[in-house]
Image (cartoon, rainbow, N blue to C red; front, top):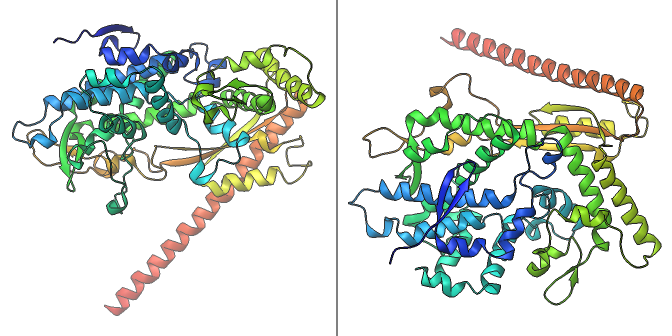
Length: 505
């Protein structure tokens, strides 16, 4: 029987067709909740076009996940084992994973899980750390249960619980450890012959996945930033090859430049938008308001009420959380409040009103370094006491430390990508030296952003900014001198060694 696909008109990908099972998932309160969760959180207060939400991004990822899976399927050689062939079940599972990968996001997206929850839920550390990916798995199970979708999934050819396990694993991604492959966990959804499918939605091997394909294109479109990366071209040339005994998604050797553009786009978006100084100021202020209002907001769960931070423990309550929490805090609370509660809510409302009135924290300056130690030294130097070098009052929460990288910490992610030549049956690696001497040499850096209160006098702020610039130049000069000293020391050692060998000769 022919499946009746539904057509969506998307501003990024044009007219896209989605399987009716995906439409069933979309038409649930748990999925529709994402219509009210901004993709870029506080960035909307800086970039007027950044009004897009997790809802449309998730539909875009589902489309691209299916497109890449089908493209890989078409390029599979006919002679391979049946166990390695991509079937319709695989494609549908990959699409569902793409659709549901962000179900667990909270209000203002990453603000909620990266800034608010660590401050409000100090009990969730180390192995108990809460992430939106974990919440996505909980929300998916909840969505299927309350909307009675398990029979519908089976009617559409899925095998439960095997395929549900596979979908969850696709969302979380396959953890890879090239140095210790024996430590990699075993997966229940699919056998090792199909482990390459785990690289489509959340690629833990090198970070190249359809989630980024969509948000690069969508975010750039709404931010008004140009992107040089062409995801359609990557999909066109993507093929599966066996590398080090494991099937992996590889691409043509001529696409290495396109992949450097991919990671450059990621870095550019972080520098120009995601970590924009005013974006981070707005999100710092929203976080502060959320922490103050946390215990005074209630959300009805399955059997009891939860606060803003504890709603993550109950999916019924969590379904009620979206960006409207901002407006909920601003609304007057009915009934009488005790003095402490009224004080917290009044302060939270004041902060959010300041955001709406554009009375924001002011940025004193920002400093980049390839070394975390430099950033920490400067941060501690500024927080020594109230008479800090800048001459203004600084609080710990006004010094924002950010790590930015290419997705693999200090590593070059391209080193984890395998390439093939036209007609070849084996894949290979391409070193940075084979691409260009102008490709980046550092793949991780640290950023310190320093803020002060909106009430800071203009002249005092101007003086503080000048002092901060001088401090940055001093730190940079010391680093250059140290590097020059090390370089001269190395040259001298080389000369001594060369002299020794000449004498020995």
